[in-house]
Image (cartoon, rainbow, N blue to C red):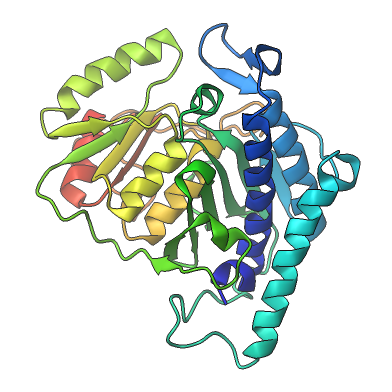
Length: 354
């Protein structure tokens, strides 16, 4: 039986993702100009689907893990499936998945098949304190609105004890589910996997470990994204010229979470971007980390009004706080920069030039 069902943290994220995938599919046929608004008057979009999915996910996760905190990008109040028109249908999907897992466990009471795709899995008791979940109900909302396949649900769990001044520390679980790409990436306790979307409801769906291998090619492909604020875009345009001096091609999917998982899977060599919110990288960066990639999360990620965090941001010349993600000597590292790469050389280059 898949670790997605056996591990308590991943099981909560799995149920949340199953809810999100169902509602994304339903909303994709119902979106209209009335359902879509803009945060900046231009292309930073938010939809009624974002708010609804976050509300349903928040309630479900709080029910499954009442000791945890759920922080969502949209800040919506919890909404029970019982109070939603499609609640019975979604609850039925979750119930059938749970029953299938129970049958699988009963058929193999000694534990997972040692020859299975994820034989060891994490220790379900390794997290003995509550965690804070960072949820993005739809990462890649512009793609979602335009019918472009690269959008997803993302969830990452971080220990309550982890401080705001060390954003690379304390992460314990991550899951990213992209319905239209038929893909789920997830990670726990230093191990990462990829599976088809059916893994959210089928405990016997095939699961492949991510081992840190790269695509079988000599090309160097980097993924990135661009913010909406003009001053940040000026910086990003300048950085792009520097970065492309060391890469052969670029990919722009429009979803940070998917980009991060593509690095984890070896489909691209690296990803960098300024200005991500913690909800953007919470799931994908942990998957990449557990897949053996070099990871540096935005240093000032928790400096948001809704967290109340107040930290001293390191100067631009300082290295990242995490000892496992050092910058190159004398690198000029922006506190806004998130970098993930398959080699230390590319990692340090992007820290200095991204």
